[in-house]
Length: 432
Image (cartoon, rainbow, N blue to C red; front, side, top):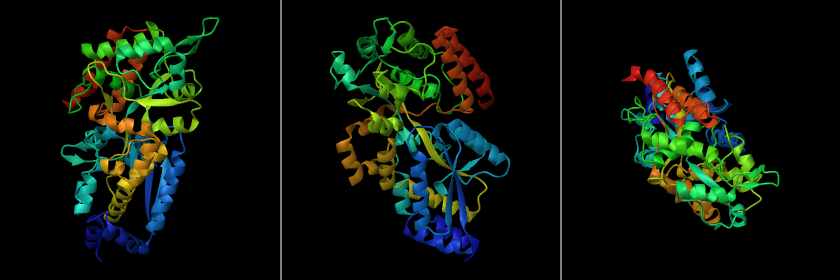
C-alpha cells in the first residue's frame, strides 16, 4: 500500500474501517502521539487520561499515546508553541478553546474538516453543541474539537441557606437577590470577624472568564466576532465590574481584595463560603467532598441570564506525516464519541459536548441521580464564547491585572476598565 492510499484509507472514516486499518499500519513500527494535557482543575484527571490512553492502545496496537502534563492552560499553550518553534511540536494538545486565534495566527494547527468523510463522521462532527463550536471554528474551518468544556455555575450550600432563613432549594436568580441572600449568609463571630462570606467570585485566576458571566448577564459582549476589537470601557462593562467590586467594598459579602481561584472550592467545602462562582469542572470535587447538601444553579441574571463557555478543545498540530495525522484523528474521534463524552462528564464534572451524549443510558441515569450535572448543559442557550481574540492571553492578563487593581482600591473601576481597553487597543491594532 502506498503512503497516499494508506492515508486515504485511514482518513476516510473514524469508524470501523479506518480504525481497523491502523493496527496493520503499525506493523512497520509504532506511531507515537504525544498529547499535551493541561492539569488545571482539582480531581483525578491525570488518572482518567492515563486509563483512556491505555484503553485506546489496547484497541489499536501499534499506536502509542503519550500524555504530557504541561501545567495549566497558559503554561500548556506556551510549551506547545515553544516546542513548535523548536521543531518538536506535539501531535495533539488540549488547549483553551479561546486560544484558537493564537494557534491559527502561528499556523500551529491544522483543521479537522478534511478528515471527515463518511456519514458517520459527519454525524459526529456536526453533533457538538453550537455554543461550543463558536470558538472551535475560524474562517470556515474547524480547528478545535470540543473535549473538556465548561461554563461557570453558582454553587450554594443548602444547609447555610436554611440556617440563614432562606429557602435552601432556591438559589439567587438575579444580581439583586445575590446581594440580598449574601447579606443574610455572611456570618461574624463575637469579635466581628467574618466566619462565612455570602459569595466569592475568584479574581486571581480565570478572572476574565468568570467576569464574562457578569458582563454577558448585563447584555454586553467583550469582543467582536473577528477577535480584533474589545469593549472594556463600555458603560455596561463598567457597571458589571463595579458590581463585583461592590460585593466586597460596599456590601461586605465577598472577601476583600484578591480572591483565590484554587482556594475557593476548599473554602466552600470548609463552610467559609456559602456561595461561589466556579467551573462546572469542579462538580465532581464538590459532589465527592461536600459534607452538606449543596446546589448548583445558573449564574444570576441582570438584563438576562448569561455565561461564557470555557475549557479545552483538541488541536492537531501542523507538520505531521499522513500516518500520524490519521492516527491523531482516530484518537480524537475515539475520545469524543457520545459514549465517552458522557463518561468523561460523569467522572469529571465537565459538560458533555453533544446532545447525543446526554441521550446515552449512562448519562440519563447520572442526571437522574445527580440533577446538578444538568445545570451547565441547560445554561448553554444563554452562553457565549469565552473572550476569543488575537493574543488573547495578553489581553486576559491586562484585564486580570486591572480588575485586581480595582478590587484592591488602587484604581477606580472606570480607570481600570479604560486602562484595559487602552492596552487591548494597542495589542489588537495590528490585526485590524
